[in-house]
Length: 485
Image 1 (cartoon, rainbow, N blue to C red):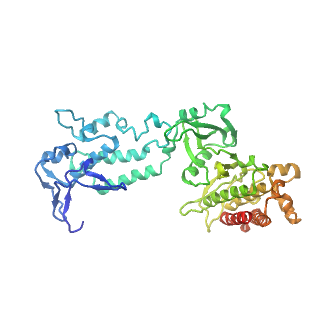
Image 2: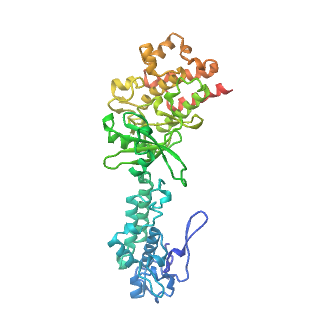
Image 3: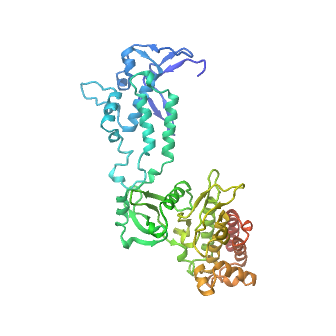
């Protein structure tokens, strides 16, 4: 501190680093600190040889030779502690101390490791080598994080004091290492062998569907300590189905960065040379398209599904500060995944776009894509993509849930897709005719009217008149209140 004496610890070791009950780190062991006058920049302070044998492995070799203690001596000792942390070893284990013999210096040991391959010395618990935890998603340090940590620790052990970094530099590099780890997809990386084992080598019996991305397989990972029998879904890229690596990495980025209770969860991924696989949590009830005409799916449950989806869409459309907008581009019942108690999550982000749309530029110029019958006609016509294009698609889904029929089924029997069919019914004042027969007896009129009003707004030909996801969510909650009150 300014105008204060500088304190050199002179006995830094792992046993002098304490953790409190909140895992905050404290330095202790000030049996022999050395004080220097304010602002002294000299050659260090002459000192007698270290009289604490238990600290010998950490002793700065230049201090041992010259007897001059400098703050760089503490830096050396901290470098030794960093390698202890990396290797999970005590001082005696680290420096090969044998009974009746002295220690090697930590710097000598570490330099030898660099010659033979230091990765072999990293603690097995960090690298997830424990066979019992084979399926753990915590696969240890990210490559960039690990390299940054090792590099700065090694520099701390430089033979001469002048070659060592200052602690300010050490802190900066450790923060960089932490940043690499916190922005690390590697914790989700799964080996091809793991995925094959889970899906019985992509057995046809485990194939539960396919789409533009490729085939989808159900499987189980058998880690009794972490997951129990944890069911997963693996989507295996097949470029002949229409999508490619760009869609793969795009979906992976969204699932990694945009985590939310109403967005399907990422379990893992594999991007080896000839494979591109994304592994998700398993939706035990499947997708919504299988339940549209299911008479046992009550109006209340249908509303809850809509509310969950609207909540997830609001999040993707900018409901959280600091996030760019995600435009899904392929909203349909097949991409609404259902769990226990009919909890709904948004899935399949292969066609999605992360966009910086804002008040100054609220659109993205793009080749229209999506699924016929759900795609915003304005987007198809102009190529201008906005979040309101998602709202249009959601409007189609809302009416499918109300009608108990898909837009394709309506097209088959009515000769037009659901939006035109519904708009025509509204123009005739016959909107109640579209209600699924199984729902008519249970649905309350106020709930129905509230639901229909917000759903028809989603299909407005003028995108500026379409509501935002947050408005839809508010109206759906009102419809639920009217139903249960």
